[in-house]
Length: 214
Ligand SMILES: [Zn+2]
Image (cartoon, rainbow, N blue to C red; front, side, top):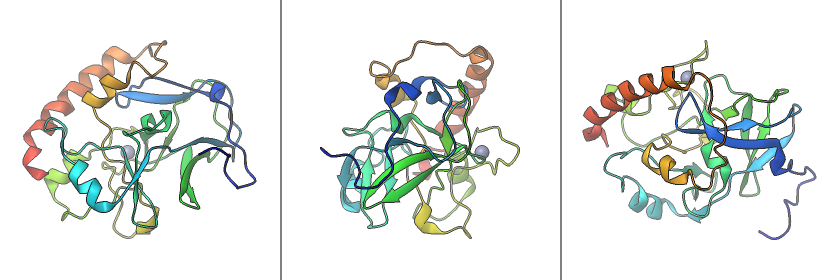
C-alpha cells in the first residue's frame, strides 16, 4: 500500500471528510468541505480475506450476528474493514446514495456521484448479497434506515440487480462502532441526535429478536 492507486485519479485529502455520530446509524462519514461530483473520496481499506476466512469471522459478535465490515470483491475475496481498515468503514448505506463504491484492480474507492455539500453525510448503496435465503427475519436484520424517499427498506440488494456490484459490508455494528470511536473524529453532535437515538433503540430491540436468522 505504498504507492497511490495506479489509476489516474487521486484521492481527496483526509480534510474533506470527518467521522461523527450519524442519525442514520452509529458513526457516519460527513463531508467536511464541498466535494465535487466524480471526486474519489477515500479507499475502502482493510485486510484481504478469503471467503472461508470471512465465514469464520462472520457472526463472532453474538449481539450483532449480522455485523461485519466486509466488502466483497469481484475475485471472491473480501476486504475486512474491521481489520486494519480506515474511516471508509463508517460510511453508511443509503438507497438513494450520493456516493458509489468502485472496484479497480482489487481496490475499492468511494467516489462522489454528485456534488456533496459540506455537512452532508456520505453514503453508498451497499447492495448486500448474502447466501442465505431471503426471509422476513433477514430483511429485518438488514433493515435500512436511510430515510430516503426511494428507500427499499433493506440494505440487501434487489435480486434483479447485478450481483457483482455487491458490497458485502453488512449491517454496521453498534458495538463495534462504539469501540471505533477512539479513532473517529467524533467532535460534532448532530442536532437531531436525540430524536433518532430513540428510533435506533427501537430497531435494536427488533433486531435482537431476529438473532436466529443468522
Ligand atoms: Zn434505504
